[in-house]
Structure formats: C-alpha cells, structure tokens
Length: 153
Image (cartoon, rainbow, N blue to C red; front, side, top):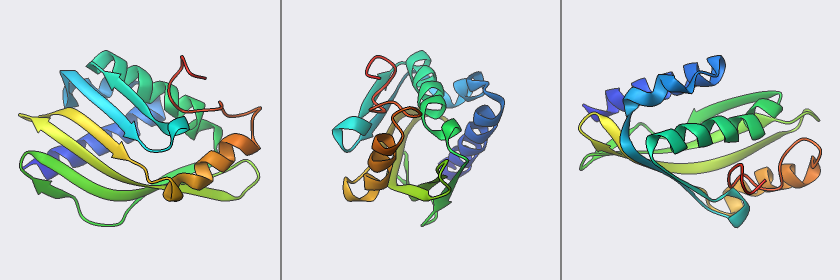
C-alpha cells in the first residue's frame, strides 16, 4: 500500500531535516526521480535525478525553513492513493523571527515506480503562498530573493 510507504517517506524526511542527513531519503527515490515546485516564479523549481533532488531539499530547507523559528506541516485531508500515486493537501506553517506566522498551502503528488517515488510535484497557488513571498521581501538579510535553487539565489 503506497500510503504507508509515503507516510514512511514523510517520517524519513523529518528525520533527514532534523539530522541534516538527506541520504536517509535515498531509498525512497528512484535514481531518475524528479521534484518540481509549481507556483509563483520566485518559488518555482525543478530538480532531476535523485542526487539533485536531495541537494535541492537540503538547500531549500537551509535557505528558508531553518531560518524560521518554527516549522510544521498540517495535513488537511487523509492521503489518497490513485493509480500509483499519492495525493495530499497540506499547509507548511512557519514562525518568522518577528514572531509572526506565515504559511503556504500545497497540493503534493508523489508518483511511484514500485515502492519508490519517481516524481514529486508540489503545487502552490499564488494566493496561498503570498505570505512566503512577503517573508522573502521582509527579511532580505535572512532569506534569498527566491527559492528557485542555489544558482538563482
């Protein structure tokens, strides 16, 4: 059942985030895995290949998440399995250095090949991630101008 495998991936993601050991996710991704973030231009990204996906996840969490006072994810609906993929609706909530909170709603789709994720897509609607964009602008000394990846910052 892919929902259990995705839940294991999500738990491994949190362990990787806490330990900074992104190799913990290797066994959850195919060698040719891809990760795309669709949304406003300054938040869009695309990584192809397991190595690049892991490097991007490390970079983006260092560039934004770790610079916030707190980060958490809230699931709105249970995981749904449809034709070899998992779909979810969630929000990432961050407490900024000022103490205020910002959040981003996302729809995530994980397409599996066997028991590994081959394609991961996060869709961010412009209105639902407006607060993230405001945070990037409000703290230029802390955050990069965009979260497109290390080459763009």
